[in-house]
Amino acid sequence: MADHLETTPTEVAGKLDGYRIVDVREPSEFAGALGHIAGSECIPLGALEAKAETLAGGAPLLLVCRSGNRSGKACDLLAKHGLAGGTNLAGGMIEWNRRGLPVVREPLSDAVAILDALAVWLTQVLQMPRADADALVRAGLPPEPRDATGAELARAIAGLERQLQENGVPPADLDLVCAAFASDAARLGGSGSAA
Image (cartoon, rainbow, N blue to C red; front, side, top):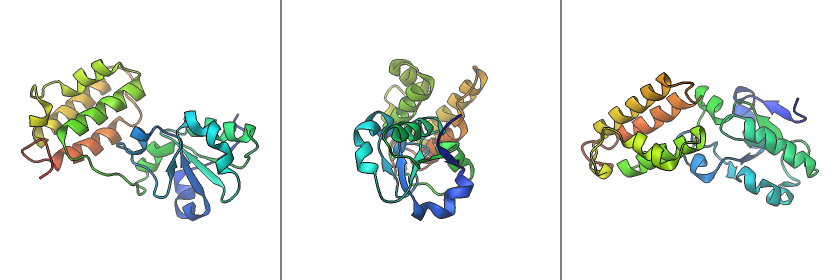
């Protein structure tokens, strides 16, 4: 059992002003499909120990990650450095998004950026080699991805979602990620960049 406090997105959503929000995901995740909570700062878990001293004092800490796992570890790590009182966001940004709570996220504005972000997500979540992830997300698209239309990208994203659902246990945020990137693709129209 963890030695830190936990809260749910619903419990904390109206009380964010009382916290210093630290998101321990990687920068690509922070800016990625799940977005981040307004006012949060990105300090990846691997860098947290070195920055622990800068988190002392002030508002209580709310630690956030994709699912609540890394942020729970972050709470425990900070407690070992004498920073008790960190609260873990149970369920992380997956649960935050499922509850329809607001996120900060800049839509991706071209086909290559969408495909690259999908491939990065696959490498992180499924521990898939980057070359395999690139091949998977680009299946069925023109040889030059920047020439893909928004509709072609949307079909490729839907195909990727189906394939991941059919091949074992899909990532918990598969639907959220695919919906975010499909929304970005819909903005592209007939070319691989936003009109």
